[in-house]
Image (cartoon, rainbow, N blue to C red):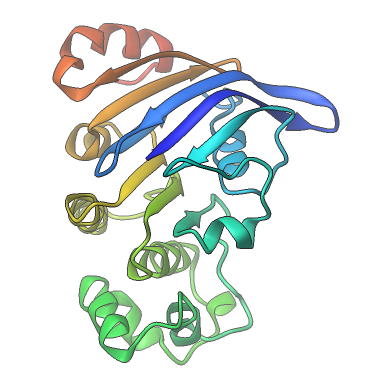
Length: 230
């Protein structure tokens, strides 16, 4: 589904990603872990076209999307939830949701059923609602657009556990329907509940990748690398 081979990328000529290679199967949720500065956000930005790669290639369903513009990659069914949420602050919450692939009213309603916190906010400008509400909006917009590949950068930051569980459930359903997800996340509970596989990044490289079936034997390494308990 998604194949990354020898990917190199960075900022102002300084290399951050140093030959990253990953494979993501259809229906799989891959969670990428690592300390701050490991290159996780740079990896996601390069996948979705926000950063031009310095080398390597990215294949989506066998098609080379390396270096394509963000809107070209989005047209191929890739949806991105960045750390800064990426909502349109001057548009209403309702418009932000409905802009996701010109959704039908029915799909918008399903999105609101999943995140009822948004219902009383529909007429407000997205820039006026709280950071947590913007985070919910960004996730709802991405999930509602029926993506082929979901790319999310720490989507649960600042959210309450019940909302995190709903996000996890929604991503699982998407993957069961044939979509795939690559998610940067540090929440141990979400990692164990959602991940089919886990990749650990250090210094712009994938140190190792493991399926959740083999996670138990890697927990000590994760604790040492990240300083958090799994």
